[in-house]
Image 1 (spheres, one colour):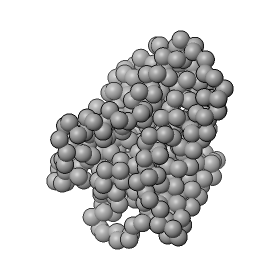
Image 2 (cartoon, one colour; image 1 turned 90 degrees about the vertical axis):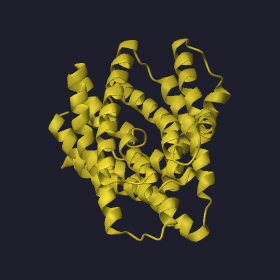
Image 3 (cartoon, one colour; image 1 turned 135 degrees about the vertical axis):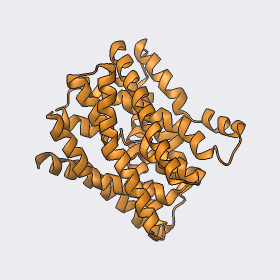
Length: 308
């Protein structure tokens, strides 16, 4: 019960307040949501990724293990969701939206504080979470962009968009600068801090703006699709993560950190992609909202079962 209340008060409630503010702002002023999504993609997300990678100590052995886990885990998730969308007979846009809702999970503003809660601010497990966040930032900006555009654009246009995403350059630069101990001027550190601090708030307000702009005509099919996404993300996700840990021989604290990292709700990236490229934005927004709410129970259950 303590874990449940802690997640509710310290994870879900702050998120809900910012989403609500976005809804109120949209109802009052009709904000330009594409401008908000561009700020997240091109400024705030790259800044927080650079800051975390540059400031976090990560060993090469841990890097290799986490990358092996992540590759296997994503393949397992992709195989499962691809089988489901094929059985359901979804249209291309919905196939992409469902994949994004399952494959992209909230490893940043939900995963980082959750990791600190579950593992009592352990620097080792935080390093694990930062690596997962790195990949969960890279994949939406590469595969995610391709996925939501593949059915309506040619490869040259998609490639041009992917290559314009700053985060694919920020990640190797931050890792290299960390490895070589390249110092940053104070003015640059301050600027990066300002930008990275704006990421979570702006992303959540963007979700609220999208929710506030919808008519909320919820059909039985939409509810079914959202429920299916929640099942695949919040229930199947931790089970597949456990299987991936067993396959690569990860045990103990490392395995627990990896499984907890997989249990979080659908990422805001799926909403930003849906809005930016006009791909099932209503489904994406409502799924993020619903999975965040339901995760109070499912994440607490995962932590309790792991006994961390």
